[in-house]
Amino acid sequence: MLASDQFITIKKAVEGEPYKEKGSKFIGFAYPVRTEEEVKTILETLKKKHHTARHFCYAYQLGFPEVNYRANDDGEPNNSAGKPILGQIHASNLTDVLVVVLRYYGGTKLGVGGLIQAYKTAAQYCLEEAEDMVLTLKKEFQLKFEYPLLSKVMRLIKEHDIEIIKQELLENCKIKIGVRQQQAEEIENKIRGIYGVRLSRD
Image 1 (cartoon, rainbow, N blue to C red):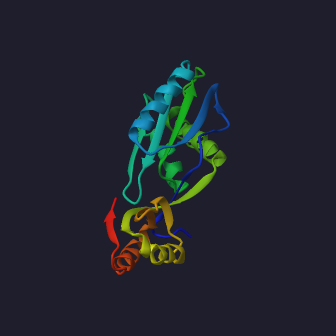
Image 2: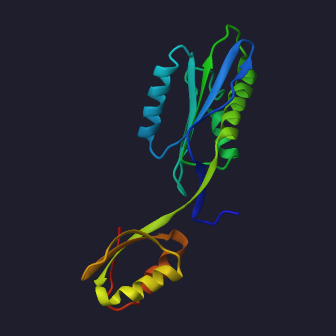
Image 3: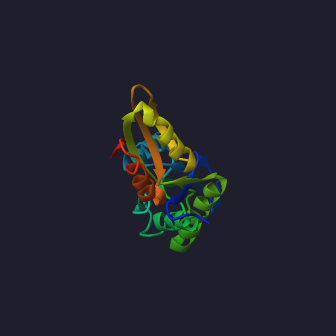
């Protein structure tokens, strides 16, 4: 069961088993992505590598908890390709993911129903190959304090299993921490309760 500040994506890019229907071959690829620029770059690379494929249909979903998604049919009939691919992303409860299904045309039209089944199945095949990864939303804080307060600060960090992103432990200490979003308010209040610690949000 996921906490309210957790989401699922995939660990690395994968290629699925081809799905074949009436001479056409459909191959699905899934990628972890964070931005639309990454999506654009991946599509350009795929088109160069598989330049003889007829269609490069895709869908992606980015972000959490606010999401941005898009489905593209790339010349196939409306909603026959991108939408079923997006449906598989949603069925797998994934975000920050791009799925591209390319089609090598076999000379026989499949009809809208056949296309929906083909693109859905190819997307399903590649997502079955993907390894899921649970990520946790974190807020980052910058702490500044004098060295004598270090033990108090480190005790709090250890008690709450807080991630230290960066630290500079000199006469004037600086520590950058990552706090789970659902704990952020509680931890912020506790840090502000240590007299002499200056806190800012990154």
